[in-house]
Length: 327
Image (cartoon, rainbow, N blue to C red; front, side):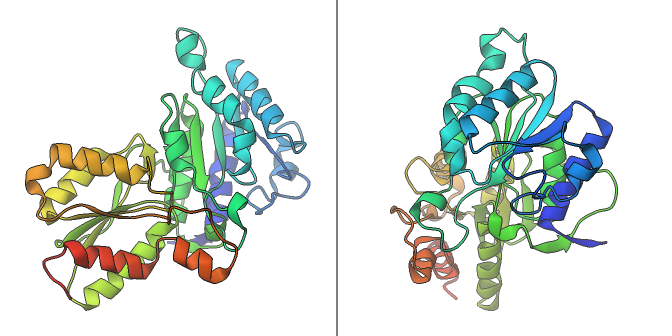
């Protein structure tokens, strides 16, 4: 199987869908003439022209509103935010507009729109550019929220998101754009709302998603060397959540650790812990543990970034806390 970058997988998804449907277009800051801030849209202006690959001013509230209006009139926009930190400028349009149009119009208007771009920490970018907003958007009925962890997942999920008639928040990681991995040739779709078991194990279930999956995978390798085999469930979609896969895994391992990059209060991990204790309480042999970003704004120094984010050491510690095998 061929090996391509995460950004190339995203580009393939958009290009293939745009070739098949002339109603699809992309807009955002630097997506056209500059070939994208992260080169995800490289070459798309040359193929599709400036009517379908549209550079916008630095005005997220304005171009998000334009895209929502276009979707209400039958087009299928893809909106790229240079970072989801900047989507806060347009959050009223997304929450009070895109998420509610179908309901408030009595089903007369669909909202086939994708909002995509990088989320969470991307290194030493300071407090205002290092925030994970998956749980914010997942809190909103009417939105679907996708956070892929691999190039293959990114392509299949983005194609599904573009074809969906509901608004989809598609959250990537700036630090993963250059990641290389196997991606299937040809047409394939990964349905939204279906988790993936990335690693099988019998001792402890770890539920995670997005770029933090890669830290979990490294921790799993270290734990395996000590005789602790974890099962990694990659949610891929955090609204809707594939609770069935999570609960099935917990019933096998009887132990659960949840790892995510957001702050702890009202997080995805909080919701999963609640659901599991409601539906699989008798299967748990240890209290649920979670590893999240520290409950502080992100510092700038490299040492502060590493200490604030979930890291392999904290993940390993959480697993050993619940495991009957202490390594």
